[in-house]
Image (tube, rainbow, N blue to C red; front, side):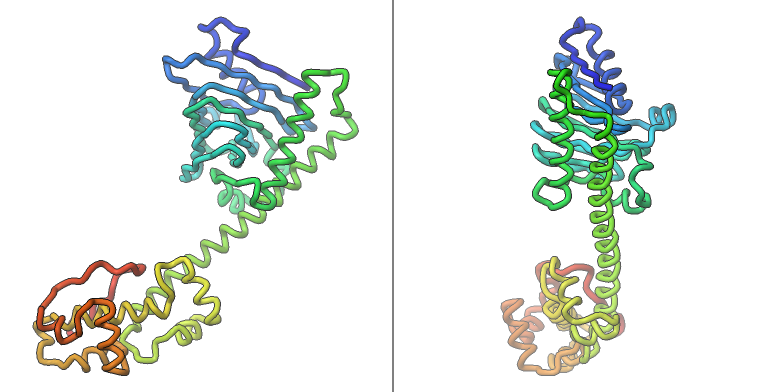
Length: 341
């Protein structure tokens, strides 16, 4: 079935209601809001390819919302692939608010609320795929919705090309029905094609997202371990990796997006702990060397050189000046406190 909608054919007073109804018939029921001073304009060309709705949408600035009442009322269970052709939008779902630029696509789940905000005229290519055709768990899907995917990112580029191709065929069928090549025998294969590529993208991104969550949790444990064992002279990247049964190479990989390497971070935490102890009145009777040794520095000379490099004063000068604080560190997490030392 092929459908076409255009607000320009309706009186101005009827366009808002007509457009909301058109969006619901072509793709999915949404609340549509426009600015009072904005003249509503919208066109849709859409076709059904063996249960998958594909089509193009052009619209004036507006806000489209899939709300909880609509979800409860229609019970639709679909995945929407929205490919931005021109204009700019912001997609919000599952706690993610993502800018969508021309050329990017976003995946949305109609079973959960989402919002599409367009602050300028927009043109989109849209495919609505029944959820049951994508045989992946919701845990993978939750990691992929409401995120922007660019054509240059591997599988998302294939999906964008596929959606564009289906929409091109749809437009051709509307403009020249006699030359429509949506042959009934081919529609099942066309549907399976978009389902397979969409499934591949969700599987890839879902796995990547799960791995990222696992690595973030491990990174938090590594940080906590380092802080708790900072006064141990043997604490080093190799020992941290060994305790957590990972390779040193993987340890450095986990810290690759941090402000500094794991080795440098350990050193900086130790320096900061020494800096604090040097100006604590109750430790005034302890030597600089003993404080450095307590926090894992085996060489007093190395400690003094490193301290001066970071803080601009020698440890003795720092203690004499009695400076209570240094500039905030570019390291992750809070610095250690050792009460009673």
